[in-house]
Amino acid sequence: MESREQKQSSLQLLREQLDSGGMRSARLMVHSLHPAEVGRLLESLPPRERAVLWDMVDSEDEGDVLVEVSDEVRDGLIEGMNTEQLLAALDGMELDDLADLLIDLPETVTQEVLQSLDDQDEERLRQVLSYDEDSAGGLMNVDIVTVRPDVTLEVVCRYLRARGEMTDGTDSVFVVDRDNRYVGSLFLSRLLTADDETLVAEVMSTDNQPIPAHTPSTEVVWEFENRDLLSAPVVDDDYRVVGRITVDDVVDVIRDEAEHSLMSAAGLDEEDDMFAPVVKSTTRRALWLGVNLFTAFLAASVVDLFQDTIDKIVLLAVLMPVVPSMGGVAGMQSLTVITRAMALGQIDRTNAKRMLRKELAVGVLNGLGWAVVVAAFTYLWFGDWRIGGVIGAAMIINLVVAALAGFMIPLTLKRMNIDPALAGGVVLTTVTDVIGYMAFLGLGAVLLL
Image (cartoon, rainbow, N blue to C red):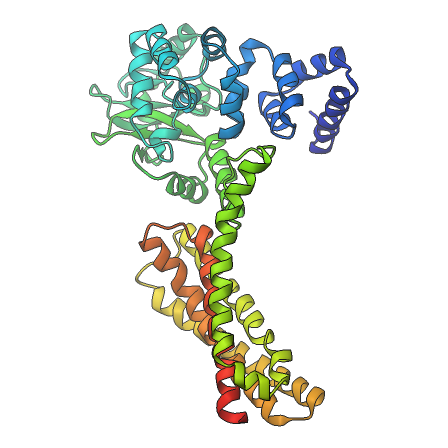
């Protein structure tokens, strides 16, 4: 098994082969890669080289590769494929992966795919498509094995052998009643070690509770993390088993959430193509730059209110950035803690007030401590204890407000159905800048003039 460093070295070598025109060697290397690695490589190449690499992918692997790339890259690849190529790429794919692709395909292709499936697979595929893609139903694999509790393990073994194959990642089969309602899970380890004449009901586990199909994907991650699950059954509103979620599906969700948080902080989308046309990328980023420009002018307008004060006491202009900067860092710390607690389901009505008191206490203590440091440094620098007192008092005010804002902003945004990762930082920066300038310059106007 290759290490991560060896894999990265192989991908780098493949890029060099593509750049140098060594198509034969490159083609052989592409055929040896996992679809996920091919997808990552496609995303890292400019459009022209990407098209060359895509032509090297076997038609039977194209569908698996399309699942691995970002939405925008996938759209570009699909645009260059005709209906016959798309149908060939989708042939034989697992239904959960097929469901992920169908939403991006032309309607004519979607209908042809549905018509090519047998009645059972078509019904299962429509079932997956009926759920939100960010729910347990959207994540699940519908290719599952179910058995009855009143049969022996020998019967189960014969059934599995006759079936011929099982889905990757299967660690158990689900036990259901006559109405397909979930009863328990029969782990393969027990199936292999218990006596053949033992009934399924005697060795099945009832601890593995099913996940409702409409459960948000973030809660699915929480369930897997806290219950140390490798797989879990998914049930509909009538408690009937409709699919299975495995840990590899959860890893994908975790990765997507991490990418979303990182990109959203800059107002970007993790599904964007890093080699998108310059004008297109410029347009996307311009909106977020405009929002930040507006908040900067808002802070500047507060400074303008105290222009006379700054003209009379020029030293205030030198020290002016200190208070907002410290407030911004303190507020971001609180914002990050609360956003993480929300993501992990660790904060609710029962502990919110305690959390608020704790953050305010931290803000007060940090404010007092750093106020003394900044005031002393300012006095030593300028020899005026009054300016040191003003900046110290402003520091306390802004760090307390920053702690309060860092706590309240993500909760408020969540209630408004706005992603805290997207807008939390901008709102917080605006608050700490405005309050920081107002406190420092306002106190300066009152106490120094």
